[in-house]
Amino acid sequence: MAAHLLGLAGPIIAFGNIIGPLVIWLVKRDEWRFVADQAKESLNFQISMTIYIAAATVLAFLLIGLPFLVVLPVLNLVAVIVAAIRANEGKYYRYPACIRFVS
Image 1 (cartoon, rainbow, N blue to C red):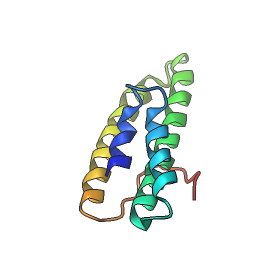
Image 2 (spheres, rainbow, N blue to C red):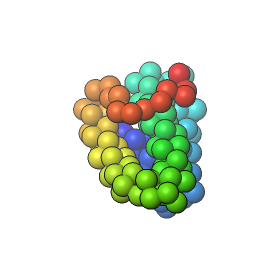
Image 3 (cartoon, rainbow, N blue to C red):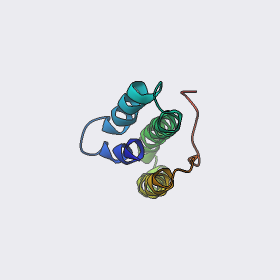
Image 4 (cartoon, rainbow, N blue to C red):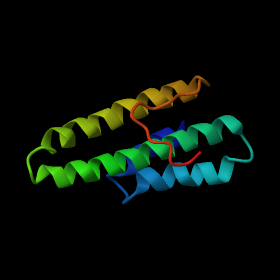
């Protein structure tokens, strides 16, 4: 659950949304399969969101990316909360619109 919630650390700490799940995955990947899987899933989603927001920022100069700069943070917040709840229940969760960088 912590790996998912640390995905919300991005606005507080630069790249905290990526560093938090990465640290949990690196520390726990050999101990707990479920924790490693969910930390890896959170890491992949946060990397994807960072790329999407960077692309939307570039496109905002053309006014095309402005709606995405509103929708993407809301999607991130909702998806992270749902994932944290599912992980707390012991259920595997897969994020929507997630590119699998780390497998």
